[in-house]
Length: 580
Image 1 (cartoon, rainbow, N blue to C red):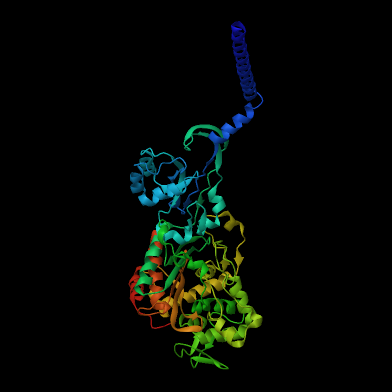
Image 2 (image 1 turned 60 degrees about the horizontal axis):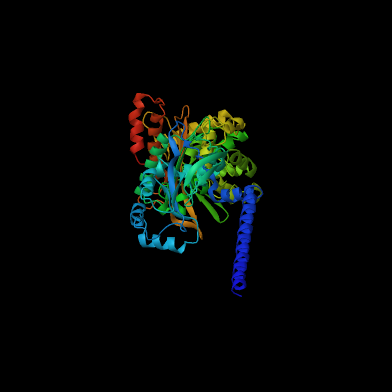
């Protein structure tokens, strides 16, 4: 009995051992099969999964193209910066070094730690964008868990507010928002590239693997702008707007022969390098977006239309007595009874009555044709974002009073840029060229010039405009050593209820040297509230200072005899007796 009892446990133990061995063998078989599958059938899938977790496609940013003035001086450039970010899922908000990081980045420490905690399920959170390379290096040296940095570029504008309305600005993602930056954003932006990189669990790049596509940097732009003239014009305009307590102002300067923009400034302005206080009101480029009635600055074009019609000559005389003209319930007035005036006298004395009588004789079609051909109511060709074309009404709708008032610049609207282009036509012997923002721009050269009026008519009108400086409303526009031609204007500003009784715009448009014009300058100052408000008193002196400095900067030789220099200086400092 005892032998049989001992055999049974031994048999049972042997059976259990066989089961265990069989199980182990089966397990090893399964593991072996799985290993074979992992190394063969599932190998590519596993490699793909691993690559998804460690191999990433990284964007290679393109460097935005630079903007230069005509002399190669930078107007807008891109500087290398870094963007710091963190993986909240990996970061430890309790790490002591976050205190130092918050201080370096000028962030609130408690808020920073809370943000990391609240975003713990996410894989990305910005710390700060566009920090300097030195600052980024200092933060990375703290060895914060989950911290990473990307290389980017930040737009910088060396001229600041002086050229802000020309250059415009970009947003934080380096995309154009205003000005040239917006108009030529695609040209400047270029194309980003891509490359494969190996990253660790915290997002740090361990190795660069493969270049998928190379970045193509943006292309540079050279403007026709001359920053020397831009700085000077900005200084004079800012001083005038401040000194007269004006609401706003603009100055545009064009090269007579090419139509290139040499300077364009506005007040108020803004600093594109400081994004903390950008106000839309300051960012508007008033020289191309704001319209106004050009007033008496349109009289030279009325006279040009008269001469071109063949009904008048430069010597033709107009009786402006008794100093006013009644058209039904509408009365047109002059500053005084000027009596009989020749065509140049109508401009020099700024006679509304004389201009109105000429317009009535010409008819609407003739006047409208001259204004339109000179560029009013038309795009200037500058291709600036937000440019307005002004309003030049159709002559079929004009009543006699409208035709008469249009002759002296009421009942229509213009921008400062359009007015400058119109005077460029007079200065360029009747030839109109599209305004160009680019130095020797190909598109500007390809467009055929328009002969608006004969060279004889243009020269004759310019000679009449010289009388404005010597005997008319523009004595304070005189420039020592140079002949000058131009026209002042003073217009009521329109409000919600019509013309504002105490709101005016002071204008002066002209060219120099008058014998062989090199530049055209238009000065417009809106709502001067301190002292005078007449164009001949407010805008003309600004014109004089800008033209004087500009001609010397450009190296233009004086064209007036030495004996006349004193007279020119005295005229520039004197007070005009005429008010238009």
